[in-house]
Image (tube, rainbow, N blue to C red; front, side, top):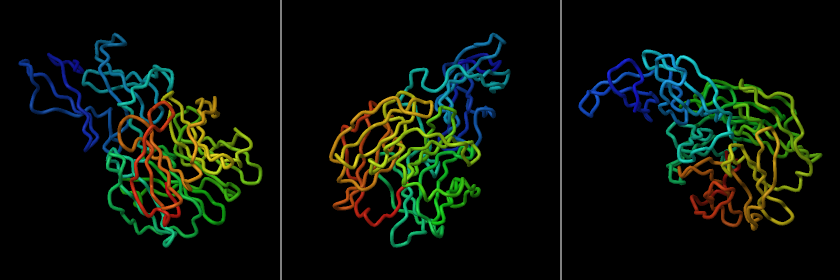
Length: 367
């Protein structure tokens, strides 16, 4: 609570999870609030209910006579000062700290990279082997499980890969990466209903040379999702920085010998240090390894997470599927097609797991 305009008392700032708006309720002077509020137009748009992870009162930080707010930018993770005006709106945004330079509050962190239907839960996209061009969405419940399958009846001919992309085109909505059998990689723009999204942007050709393509995470720390890919012929790992417009910039080699890894996934910030990480299962020992991101496009160290992962034939990043503030992981067990949710602990490990589906061996792609 704070005085955010020229009113006579403190106000309550509310964030609607339904409409996405930030609403001011004024004090009535008797310990309660007025019946009607007004929206702070500069803090939201109805198409972007998650522009900020958290907004809190900051007092008059710039001593201009108006109350200011502090917020965490959803896309970049930066700490921002929102300079208030006489109406309680934020006129200017000033960066106070870059992502990873301040303590993160895990319980408040919301990553909508996997929230395709904008309901604050992580969803899953899949393509069934029997219908290799038909997309289906499994809506998240917020408890680590998924609701009934929704078939989009959206056909994409000749696809060889579907991958989570994050917000590649800068419209604040999560996208998908799709590779075609001729090697063309494209960004398919998301929307409130994904298959009614805003268009397709070609990333480039020649991507059939890659044996793994990972998306959805920002490895360079510039607030834009990047693409990481493994080159089949050389085992090189390449970083393609996102441009924020659906495409990528010039690539940089960030690793060698990655053909030794069987499964790779861009898991997100698994260890809560403010940087996106990568998980890889090694073929020789069946162990899963965490590669800690350094926020500069590379990795600062490797940690063995556990062994026995040769029993799994697919890994998929899912974000915080159970809304406990920690990044989780999905894996498919080869023997019976069970889909297993591994619950992250925020320290780079998975202390517990549970089955969240059966029959997933019939699924060709998981994103």
